Amino acid sequence: MFTWFVAKRLFAQGGSSGRASRLATGIATVGVAIGLAVMLVSVAIVLGFQREVQNKVLGFGAHIKVINYQSLGRQEFSPIVIDDSVTSRLSAIPNVASVARFCIKPGMLKTDANFRGIAIQGIGQDYDQTFISSHLVKGEMPQLTDSVSSGSIVISQTTAREMQVDVGETVYAYFFEQTVRARKFTVAGIYRTNLTDFDKNFAYTDLFTIHRLLGWDAQQYAGAEIRLKDFDRLDETLYDVVNEVNHRQDAYGGYYSSLTIQMEHPQIFAWLNLLDMDIAVILILMICVSVFTAVSGLLIIILERTNFIGIMKALGARNKQVRHLFLNYALLIILRGIVLGNLLAFALILVQKYTGIVTLDPEVYYIEAVPVLVNWLWVALIDAGTFLISALAMIVPSFVVSNITPAKSIRFE
Image (cartoon, rainbow, N blue to C red):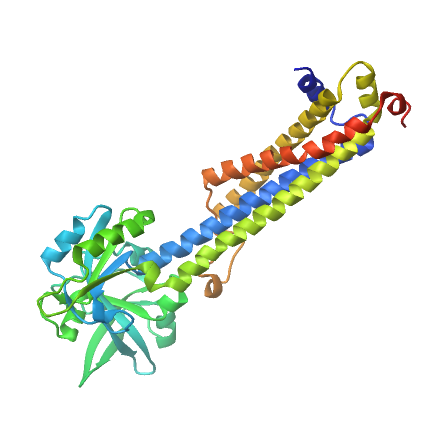
């Protein structure tokens, strides 16, 4: 096509016809590149932040919990029967990866010099301990089962610092009911997740010890924690769980109920969802910047090439052909800006991913360095959207060429 051929020749010259044209082309290219890079980096950071915080919250809690209806909204759990029949039915539900019994009992940890309240969760061999193990900063994960007392406890770094204890040292746990009951534990491991509300409130020991302290019958537990194969199918799986166990009565008169981790911690997930609005605002602002610089650059280029436009028209080119020529020229500028923007964005993302050079306050943001996550669908949509919106925006300034007449433009200086 003639107009495309001429546009490529002009673009290959790099705006050599004038200083203003070169400057306008450079500014337009840089504007598109920076705008696109900011969009890509911002989306990568928000997606990475959402993933990291969500994974930490999911690591602490089950995707879905089956508990006694009377336990809803309470700190202390009422017992519910979680026998082999219940776990088998839950395990048979599609998308369920694992089912683990659990017990939790509030108490107080004490040393000779310090004490603090805490909730101690009892976990057994069927509990997925990968998350806690991966966040250990000292010691190791002990063998925690539902059949024997380990005498070990895993506490957070926050708790260890406040209690002034280390791995291998002894702490006493006191539980208050009608009488005070005490247990002696050895600190086997210390973990840190930087989720302050969780770190300062939870410790872990074997299920056998907590179950005995609660004094429940053999098949009674605080509930069952269900982990899913695909968390994106949470609502679908909850529906299956509800149909399987909800509103049914156990042998002791307790009624089964189910809740998701989003229901258990709505404030955290609501906060993460609000970050999507931040993405939308950034995308709109940066696309506006890219469009503005590209439009400004095209207008300057058209005005500086008035002589060229007059000659083209004198040789028989129609307004439509000249407009298409400059539109193609603008598209080449936009494409170059997109390529440079991608290179800049991925360079910044890779540097942050492998060096963690930009850090955060974990007390506020739950993580120590800015996380990044590249979603190729988002990259494709941002690239395509930037190109399409910028290209459409070029149509209006291209009509300036219709007002340029050959007789006046050839004499234009």
